[in-house]
Amino acid sequence: MNTMETKYSRWDLTRWMFAQTRPVLLPLLASATARVADQLLGVVMLAFAAAQVVAQLSDMGIITAPAYDSPWPGVLGPQTPWFFAAQPLWVVLSFLAGIAVVKAFLRYLEQFCGHFVAFKALELLRREAFVRLYPQAPAILGQSRAGDLLVRLTRDIDRIEVFFAHTFAPAVSALVLPWLTALLLWITTGSTSLAFLLVALNYLSLILILVLGRGTSQEGSLKTLAARQQVATISADVLGGKNEINAYGLWPEFATALGKAREEVHDATKSTHLQVSLRRGVTLGMMLLQAFVLTFVAYPLVYDGALPAAALAAILAGSMRGWESVRGVEDFSTFLENSFAAAARLRSLTSNPPVPSSASGTLPAGDLDLRAEAVTFAYAEETPKVLDQVDFSAPAGSWTALLGRTGGGKSTLAKMFVRYDDPQSGRVLVGGKDLKEVDVDDLRQQVLYVPQRTHLFAGTIAENLRLVAPDASEAELWQVLKVVGLATEVEAMPHGLETKVGTKGEDVSGGQRQRLALARAVLASPKVLIMDEATAHLPTSSALQVRAAIRQALPTATILEITHRKDELVGVDHIVSLD
Image (cartoon, rainbow, N blue to C red; front, side):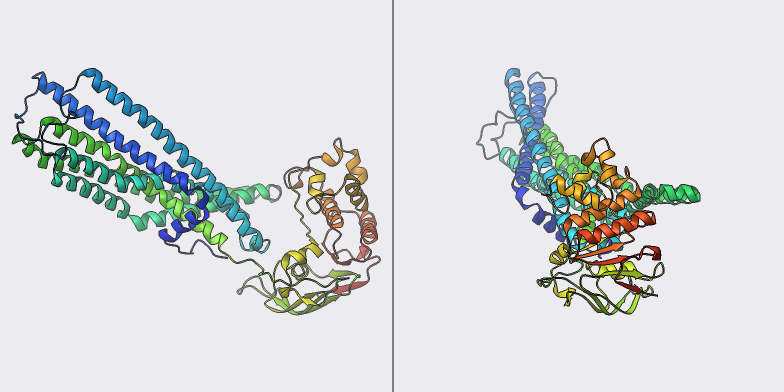
């Protein structure tokens, strides 16, 4: 499985995220357009207000400015545009109010479209993640910790929301708005130098913000996500193993481990906070530098009478207001690394090939035997071999018991018959056909594995049974419950088949959980049934009754049973020991 160490460039991740969310890109463009228009109107609004203040004060003689008597240098003609000339108060207020109303609509449109895209994108990414994850199951569960997978499928995807809701539109605005502001400045003043300086200073600020601490910020984001993953993993272990932790008095050790993981999160976020401070300083510093430079260049024009004082006020106010686009980049640039880091983790998960790889063949018709030929397997190269040149066979239609010491490879061998894993060498065959040549879905429809620790979903008994047969009638459900000796117990429950089993089946006993799993398996009518300690929670008498009923319900099925209990081996056709 790929891990956090998988390297993807930002460009690769951006293309991947856009490719996964192609259906919602049009609203994203609408969000960016609305943001640019909103911010451009903000520039016009503040520039007009500043120009009118200076023009009104000049007309009233409160401030004195050099006389302006030159033809207007802008492209609007020789007359001073009304924008810079003193206007009646009602005109000023009406103009500003009209812009404010339009800005409010554009702001709403930007936020609505942006967040619509963001949450729809999260839906699409989650769907893609589960679609890609399914072919890797259950092997991926043995290669990854549950807490890590949970973080990738939930929090990591949530962090990508920043990219769609708070990144694309601000980035487009930061690139486009300086040019539009400069165009307005050139149209109204005719000054190419002022327009060029405004664009240059904005783009210089963007470059500094994006480059400043780029590598450190990316590394910090990766460390932060890894540290948070560790916290989630330890927390999941604590919740899942609380009974064992209590029984063995291990709370101090787990509390220490959790505290250490939280300290690592705190340490990892320090660099991120430092980047926020540095970028905020650059933003404010460059904004003040722009004000100084524009004043330095424009004031001589005002002093010489080439521009009215109102134009200088408009230039300064409008350029400062246009700085909002740069602040937008500063706001997302630091935390965007979290989005890219989360996207990299998610992509590494979804880009893994199916495990095992599937073929197009099908199992033969009729009864199926099981056979393993010189099978060798280890879970990792550096770990000891679990199986070493193992041969095994279970004739078609037989009941075979597989015995052996704990950790001897019984469950590992059994799982190979449903291709949870493939051997490093040797062959695994069902019905005489090498499983590497068989379609995985076809295999698992006919060969069913019931693990020792089965999973029940947080639904009703009926819903859990119908997972293998959605159209099964209530009569069929009661029949399979009778097979495993649960019908009387379920009938005694207040809600019968509609009884909730709780999260992971915690509201039923261990024996009831195992028998529900067996009932579900019987309902599927497989050609091969593999039971891994499936009656371990039952007394011997009950286990014998259940085993006899299963054979009666599946008279021709090949049954492979893994057990430690030799007192239950009644009616077994073959006994195989791995010791």
